[in-house]
Image (cartoon, rainbow, N blue to C red; front, side):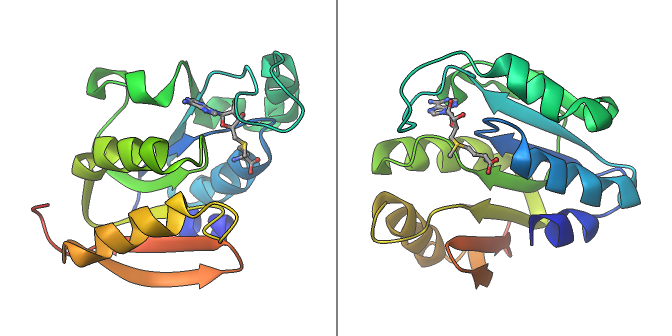
Length: 167
Ligand SMILES: C[S@@+](CC[C@H](N)C(=O)[O-])C[C@H]1O[C@@H](n2cnc3c(N)ncnc32)[C@H](O)[C@@H]1O
């Protein structure tokens, strides 16, 4: 589905992923972006925060797993809450939020990236389940603003489309 969402982006699209880990989702998004000559920004500490295996440096594995799509990826190694607009290209056509799944972190990520997404752009959330109740809570709050429309979901992946310019 991430591949399809990326493939449906407009030409020269910018995509952003928060939480790239070992690069699996980045590979699917980049594979879709190939078709529209897009590129993506991958944001992660690559210190494995919030992951069950505990903290460890995963950057070398990410780099190895994404070597075939390295031309499409711009790495931003930092905490997502510290990301600033000047580090990426706007507007964003696709954002995938899959970092820290706590309510406060997902809310912070969403509120940060939301103004960077144009009308028709998509924000996808991973792990929208009762195991991570903060994720569906943020999705519900986003829908309640009227700025976002529920576009679809597959298992725990849920994606919204911006329908209004203001929050
Ligand atoms: C569930 S994994 C991402 C999986 C990846 N999207 C995939 O499907 O292949 C979560 C990642 O978020 C990162 N992470 C956790 N908290 C973060 C934060 N505050 N800022 C940036 N990255 C964070 C972790 O280091 C980890 O690599």
